[in-house]
Image (tube, rainbow over all chains, first blue to last red; front, side, top):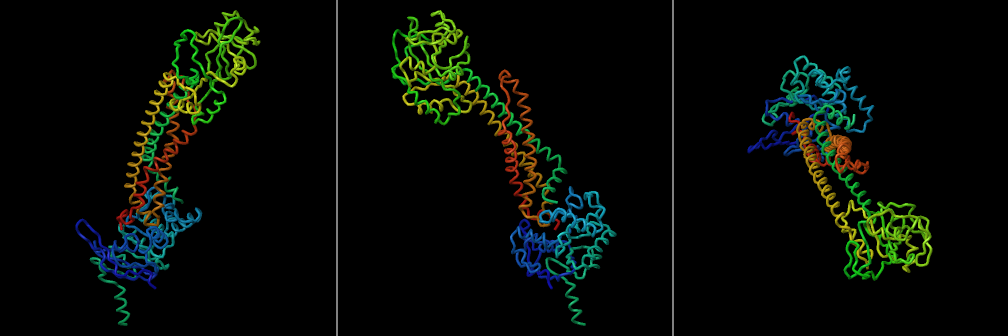
Length: 235
Length: 385
């Protein structure tokens, strides 16, 4: 069953006197439980695709549905609620709040929910335990390594149990060993049924995904699911 | 974890900016509190002086004729007083808008009486009011209270050879001398002072008054307004302010108050600008952070809440500390002003107003930065995506 449906999505920016088209009538469906990798050269539209999926940038035209909800038909405030309830973000630069501890950073999405303080704390600490940081809860981000910060970011993205996880270059700033650990963690989440869309430059990361979309100039150049379909038809 | 926790953590982390903002607002609040407290203390002191000075408004029966006396010298045998004030109309004073500014009303009846073959001016007074108005009177014996009692002026005592406790026949009625005025050097020395009802009966002027002296506390009102209000309340009378004294003090106080408010408004505007600029800087500095909040599902009002709560905490702190600083500055400055006679009084309204005004200014100046923060598009704020 499709969790995500993009229909003829175009996104254009005005850059000075130029009109830059980042996505050109792009259509894409992603099933629930998929680990989708998005690759492509710089300027191919990867980040714009993630922004559009993340309800952060409205498309110039086309329709984006997640879990059957036309997300850009929602009001701004409803879109915020949608992000909180349906989406988890993992940013390349972690984007942790520097003056909050790891535990507080993970609790951030819960701060505007009606859970009790005890429940917020319990959820956040169990999520930190899940990503392997049970003994780092009270550390500030600057007291953590890059990999640990990434784990905190992953814990934060998962604390609301979102159906969809969006990761933008999650290993972009990490060494190879730490990158492998993070990818293992994401794979583990995927095996648990989590739908993940990951933008990456690193081909090695594609080992863990079960579908890859290659973008170029705002268009899908190649989608491995099509190849799989061809293969299955041939068989 | 609640939004408040984020605000407190942020303030704690960005101590420098929070302290700078607090001090900026604190100076503003302290300046306003000091100036207003000083002008209030000096005003109250001037008010007390006015009270001690005695009556500053005289109400007399209206006459079309010009007065033919000056400095106590009257042109021979001309009696200009042809009418009296109806005592019953005095209650109209209670209805004037500035009634609270009237401290004392001293009704009087005047008339000539005969004592031991000599004609003497008798003044019937409301004893309580009169002795409050004439604080400089020094009496041997005691003031009159009621009935047929008399206090005699120094010249009358000398002329008639009186002593305390004497029984006097005044227009064939017996009065007891209970007090003797020390020499005042004024017309009061020539008077026999009796309780108002007794004097009215003796003079055949029941329910009538010759004049009324009023002590008005015009600390916060123009004396001209008081005169107009009294004039309207008491038709058929002439109401005159003792202009020189009142006007001079009111002018000085008015200028001081105007100056205080001028500085206060300027300081408040500077304080508001300081908050505005600092908060705008803070928002720019925190753009990415706001982007994160928005990306993880914070509504615009949550962001607005974060910024305004921070402004409220800093402003309230500045308000409290500013008020205390202002009070200390006032206590330090007061002894150096007006001969050190003015005193500070705790004014709860000013204390509350200082904190409320600080929070109001802080919130008002932070509103635009807060709205700007709340309107940030998460993708623009993050740029990472």
